[in-house]
Length: 303
Image 1: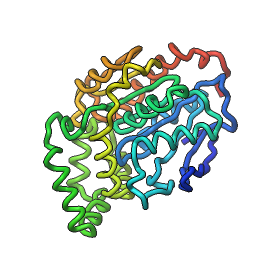
Image 2: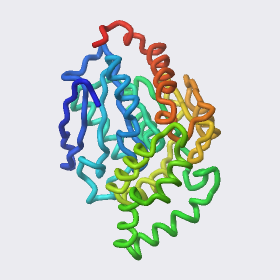
Image 3: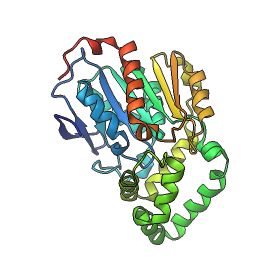
């Protein structure tokens, strides 16, 4: 992933272990710092093309696993898996690494995490890049309908009544060709994103389990952050795809209208994951944004 990387764990105040990877030895405030935050039951695989690109460009990069995700601990206590706690985890991790300023990048639910960090810890947020996200209750708008208002409670009930069967089906979703085809067609630009990318995504989703999905989906229904958006003064780039079937474009535009000092960039053929559909175009636009607002990135030697 990185030309040079250091992987380690950070121990939280409640004794959980958060896994992280960085491409620098010690934080240098003279170089831009990028902190990536992935989406709902996703992984850093969704940022594959961005982390590789910006690593080669010489940017300092921090990636991490949320509590209860993959190599981090905390999955035993779903009640603590809240946006407020996860934002605190990321902030404390940055504090531990002596990072006092960073550009936070979020995709889908990662947008909610970035917004929570900007609300609770504004001093550390130098800028934001928000892709395919929304602050609005997802039950009301997901797939541009309110279908999740009905589907989510039924699925949650199924998990409660038949946990073993439900969890087994969820875990095996990555090997189900029907599931792979549905996800490939609805969540991505099928012509641009490989089947291998989808298989990796679904396998990682299966590792996390349905319990994590519904806990965080519930968090996305109740985050109350609208009143704080106008206070987020850092330069912000909001991106998306015109063919996003999950979080429709107009919701990202609404977010852009509420956060000051915001730029937008929407790809005509982009899906819910435009950074995988058109990585070169997304990377180029993010780089323009970074150079425009944090131009010290032009003043150090690329390694």
